[in-house]
Length: 125
Image (cartoon, rainbow, N blue to C red; front, side, top):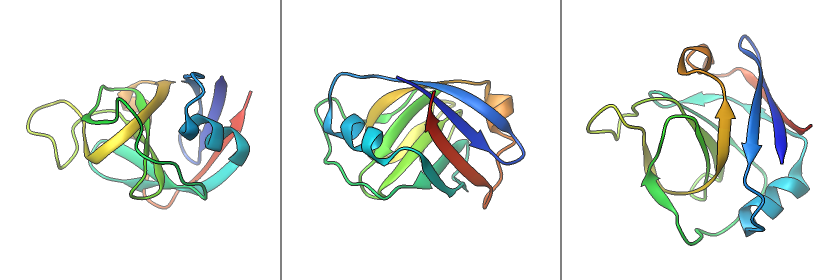
């Protein structure tokens, strides 16, 4: 499933969501379009969502640059583009385990332009 993520001051970003039928992805689909506010945590953008899903098989805290994950503790969606305060090296590390649901098609430089408090919109394309 393709999504468009629009962040004020950054522009639209394409995302590819894995459609393996997980509860997280099903809840995300039902909640589209989403509107929220950007929060920054190091080189991570996250935004709160109105749906809940449990931790699923394969949940993890060590991420790859460009991955999108659902953080049940938020509940929030996170986009990783570099080290976070939890990282011990240059790899992104989530605050706790997350369900990885896809990837963004944007450079870390582009994502680093997202500021705290910016409006974010997510829609199916």
